[in-house]
Length: 88
Length: 502
Image (cartoon, rainbow over all chains, first blue to last red):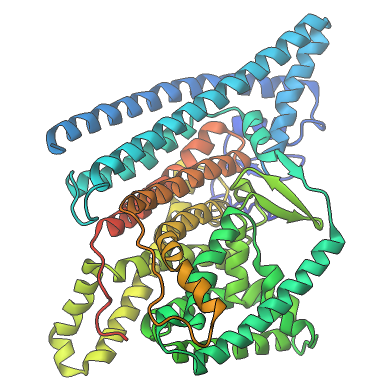
């Protein structure tokens, strides 16, 4: 398995995973990483933090889905009009 | 590996619920709602894909079925925009699948077939003996047999068999090459190794090799004059056998032999894989989300070479490609120098430039993805991780370009195989029906859809945050839309013979 390489830009304060040493730019991503990759190693507090981070992520995903749906609808009607105009 | 640890997270969420409220009903309810969710997602996904394929088929039927391929019922830009939008829309739809456990479940599904070591051993021996005999025989027939391409066993086996048919088997069923590689069979009898294969070479010799093979295919009359082809096969045999003797058979065919590497990469798309000595059946393209296939830059360069060579050989056999070459040759430069060298130079520059553009666009997408997601994962790592799904695109292009050739020339191949020295001078050539071009457009699009789905799975494996995983795909989707539009444009152009060659 290829290892994932990371570089931290200078002047950036990174959050480093204490189990594998991988750096993350935000605490949320580190929390999610710990829950996904090191579930058996982490304690109860970190598990709760993981579930909270997942809930926040779920909210953000829902709003992303709405925007994606809007894009698909716009694409659909855009092409409908294009075909109505040019494909005769 | 597919996103396995995520499953632990999901499962343990369920475990926690069970701990808190320890009744059978809760567990049953959780399991039921979970399977319901997975089931609904699968259903939605199938319906969406079916609808997409229907739309594609319908537009093909409208635009291409009754017409020769150069006349479209809709403006060409609209046809190209529709193709690009199909890729963009399917990427948006793929981003709706956010359940890590579902993605993991799809990617970890596999059935192990019973191991039959004795049969496999004998089949491999027989396959290699057959391949070795065929190799010797087609070289002999190339020099002594008829010099007509459509009647020559050498040309038909090389182009209909090895160039067209075997890759199709490799990506639709499973990689057959390791069992029938004649040069490998030859070098197993000569287990000599003088030099350790340098790690720093990576798979660059294979990249250069495959580009050189395609270049030679374009420049030299290998597909029209059997004698030239037989000489080329001898030259290639000499090269690859020497390499295998110097660096050792295993290292050479693993890293440097272009054909072996090509078939292994195409084989990664296939539903049948060999693991631990036995066959395993999984969903097509499942292995492409695996991080073991591509390990460094040379692998990425090889995969892009596969995508580019099919685009290039498609382009130069169209009127636009012929026009480009003619323009260069008829420019003032062509008046100073003799025609043929200028034409060869024009073909070579077009080949190299296009490849560099394709590679640079892809590599830049890795850097752009890093910047866009504000991640610490290097652009190189991202580019390497998203490279295997491109193999699905290459497979789609290959099928689009070679399905017609294989179908139309397979009776000729059969006849030449039955009587190689005196084949019928006017062999049966099937003319594929008009809807075959529509099928080609379908192959290109299905390849891209599979690539998008596998890239989605790779992104989920690479990034802990699902929003980051979605955002990381944007640059690659743009590159894929670019590749699709170029490929669909080539398919819409009328065919032509490449000028000044032959």
